[in-house]
Amino acid sequence: MNRDTALLGEVAAIERKSIQPAHIKEGTRYVGLEHIETGGRSVSFSRVASDDLSSSKFEFGPHHVLFGKLRPYLAKIACPEFDGICSTDILPILPGPHLDQRYLAHFLRQQQIVDWASSRATGINLPRLSPKELTTLEIPLPPLDEQRRIAAILDKADALRRKRKRALDLLDGLTQSIVGEIYRRAAATVALGELFDIQGGLQVTGARATLSLEVPYLRVANVHRSRLDLSEIKRMRVKSSELERTSLSRGDLLFVEGHGNADEVGRCAVWDGSIEDCTHQNHLIRARPLSNATDTSVLCHWLNGPDGRRHLSKRGKTTSGLNTISVSDVKNAPIPLLPHSDTDNARKQLNVIEGVRSQLLKSGEGASLLFASLQSRAFSGQL
Image 1 (cartoon, rainbow, N blue to C red):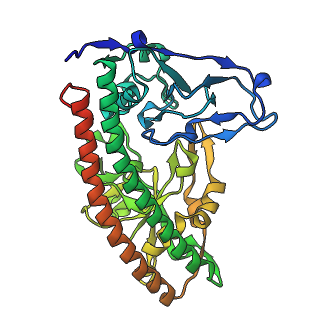
Image 2 (image 1 turned 180 degrees about the vertical axis):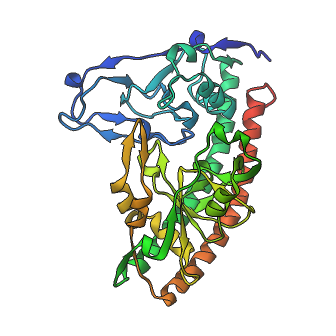
């Protein structure tokens, strides 16, 4: 079987057909980076309103692959099913006659290719991959029928992952419904700082290299909405006084202080105490209950919901492309006061949902491993 390779620029064209705002019709479908799901499994759009755009955009059609060149590590790569215009931070790639669109999209979404693109992006705060660099990417080029067969297999495997994700999204929606209903019945509110001790974390700098005490620490990548990702834990050197002040305790709330995406600022999770002598960096803000009677598990879900996020979303400030909140913002966040009976009732319901979620996550891990294996085999000639 022919397993020749080619440079992307030899078998596809990066079409930057620019259109000026004055020539864009009202109602045209517009795709920005925010409309493409990380991993590229879905793409949505908004409609252009009168005088809505102030800069030029790129045109694209259903035969293109849309490639997000800004922050390529987000893997915003999608196949649209419609004509429209897109942000100039998205490159419309038109496959040539010897390259299948779906095959190309699956190839570009591989983690090793995402890593390749990220390593070649330039710019500190807003890293971008140049179109010229993208054309130098080497891609396996089996016969067209073989490309379509591979793409069909990967489409089916990816659909299985999407079903798992849809089920998880429904569970998250049920959680927010339960928590939102309970908190809306609260008769009074109080500032978070009245019930919690709030403080920032430690700055990670090269000056710490001389310190003798080394401990694990949490960073933004470890804290998601109502869950932790502890698959990669980094370590830093600290003073004993710093560790005593910032060491995490089970039940602590951790808020994301800064993020490139404004929607992610203020997301929070509860520390599970699974790592001893663990601290946190300054891009996370810790909130520790002043009383053992304060339950953080239910509150965390509310803080990650639309009502709980409103305060911190309004307080977020943007500096050099980074959106941030302060310790003071977290202290002043208003939270409803619930009777213990309501909190206990919500916790019982959420425990049942979490049990179902855990089962789905386990099965989803298997689906992800299968998909990664198929990807590897597909583009190495073994599928």
